[in-house]
Amino acid sequence: MTEQTPVLRLEGIVKTFPGVRALDGVSLTLLPGEVHALMGENGAGKSTLMKVLGGIYQPDEGQIIVDEQPVVMSGPLEAKAKGIVFIHQELSLATELSVAENIYLGELPRKRFGLVDWAQLEANTNKILKKLNVGFNAKTRVGSLSIANQQMVEIARALTVDAKAVIFDEPTASLTDAEKVVLFEVIADLQSQGVGIAYISHRMEEIFKITDRISVLRDGQYQGTVNAAETDEEGVTQMMIGRKLDLSRNESHHELGEVAIEVRGLSCGNLYHDVSFEVRRGEVVGFYGLVGAGRTEIAETLFGLRNPSAGTILMNGEEVTIQSPADAIARGISLVPEDRKGQGLVLGMNCRDNMTLPQVGDLTAGPFVSDGAEVAIFDQYRDKLDIRTPGWRQTVGNLSGGNQQKIVIGKWLSMHPNVLIVDEPTRGIDVGSKSEIHNLIRELAAQGYAVIVVSSEMPEVLHVSDRIVAMYMGRIIRTFTSEEVTEDNLIQAISGIEGGKVA
Image (cartoon, rainbow, N blue to C red; front, side, top):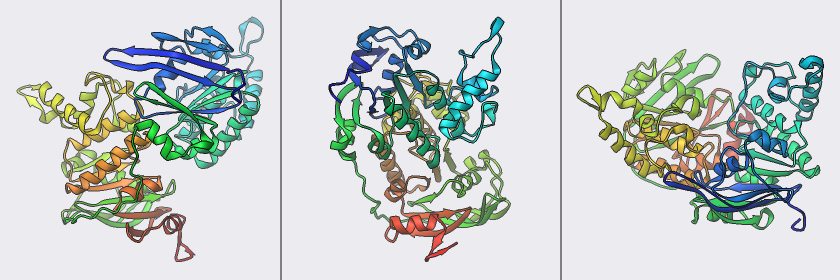
């Protein structure tokens, strides 16, 4: 493989923003037919490097070399013309247009007098969709598709050109397990055609399943490249963060306080049924189950986003009515939502204003909001959560996904809640930041907070939880203590199997 002529080389790339050297002499080689992982913590420079390659940013120093020829990328269209295609993590689709129009946007086939050749457009699109084995067609309106299927439309764009290199940025973040299998088949097919694949992901199991080589960035600097078959998760993690991670199960023991929140017989239509549990002060209760099990819907009900159809909620032993997020916040319940962009942040606002938004009415100096009080809160949680940003004025939409998630967590921690609900706390976050957030969750419990963690990652719930609630099709099948839970009995429970019988 090393004797092959690279399809793409980056040499000595430097990119500086005010107060930040985002890339410091980064070099990278992509060979034909390989899947090359690019890894690093949030803020390590991965996205910046890809934006330089795509012409969104111009490098201060260094060269981009395609087919052994230096090139200057003026933008994504030029990159695509040179055979470099991007599959972005963030969807960039026109939801009111059809699948076909989105896939060929800007390149619609034409016939005489410049009219769109709709028949050719539909035929070309359905040919690509057949390869992806999806359940929609060329005429489907993109806005009617699920997020996962919209991601498949993004992927279909890569198949419209004779690509030399395809860059996938967290492509499985919104995909089901079945859709992941199709994606990996597409990647294998591109490999067989000699296309070089650059693959950005935080998911170690994917990296070691499909990649040939792994390159690591840390703080904008290139740390090295290793063969995937000759290393392991611990080795890559140490390259990324310069230290070992604590990946053990939760074995911490501290005295629990009184019951902070109790749920009795809670139901919500067809979403979940007859759910009962309690969370004590100083305790982390994890909710684990398959997609559609009802975990997120329970969290949304406790935060007032859904109204239950039956059951009661008790805070500190007293029955309460929660009909809105304002009610929940007044009761000391905070929710870090699964969808940080849609529900957790105002992307056009700066970091400080996002973090203090729920309590801005309490941070006044006379008729005005106290800038000093807001900045003090931001500084405290920036340091506590290691939020990487040049300063509070930075627009949240410009931060990496992991740092955005930390802003959301900091926003609710600054409210000093009685009950903190965290839905998928580390989705889209690198392993180093995951460890920090896991430690923070444990630290909050030790300080007396009652914490509910909803997660689809088994290592996560095993690592942070004192007890784990296993759900299946809207019902609690079993609640495990950290001492009695095993991977086998947890998997059986979330599959609806309890005591050898299907629930």
